Image (cartoon, rainbow, N blue to C red; front, top):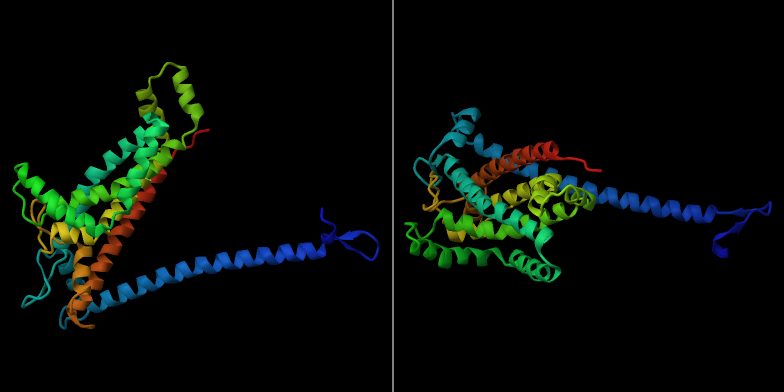
Length: 320
């Protein structure tokens, strides 16, 4: 122990009061700083929720002679979204269906491909191959979303037409494909981390009783890492729900209640960006629709995260 950290006491015995005081002060500062950072996050979240739902409530109570519950019911069940029509129609179902088309379509692409990529990187690929594939996936994650939008508009849509699919110039299929490509690195990276965290003794025990490589992956590795795999799936779908620029360019800006991926659509996030970048004056009904749609999107992702938490908790397994 350094001699300068010891302070002689009056009775001749060493005293550590100064060192303990300095350690206590550092501990208090670290604890206080961590608390402040956590508090900032909570206050920021609370502020976003307050502004969002306050403005959304103003939208639902702005029409004279119409009850709030009737306005909310029309908002969530209406099949027309025409804020500039006379009279205006505020049925969010067309925007909701467009969002679901993009989310589900991208999930069909990114989730299985990402999981299979993770299985290959974790269980089959050599160090040399892994060193090439992983940076390539990271490059995909770093490409700007506007580039993916133009990829869908000028490459994927013509490709779909050449394959015999009668799609419109702007279509949900192209938007779903580019969003699926965007979320693929997220799924593969998180799934690989989940599979790599499976203890080696589990694999070795399975090999010891004569299991093949495929059987070990199917019956041991994937079930053991299922919690992390499910979490990666939910994060990827949440990322797809919130995507804006790519779907705006590839899928269009036409609110359309359809489940046909060949049709042009508009997602909830694309509408918010479209109105926010326009000339909607503050306080107008068109301006307030931004917050109404945003509140609906928030509730959608909120309940999705609750469901994800329950699913992950259900499939979580502990291996010793």
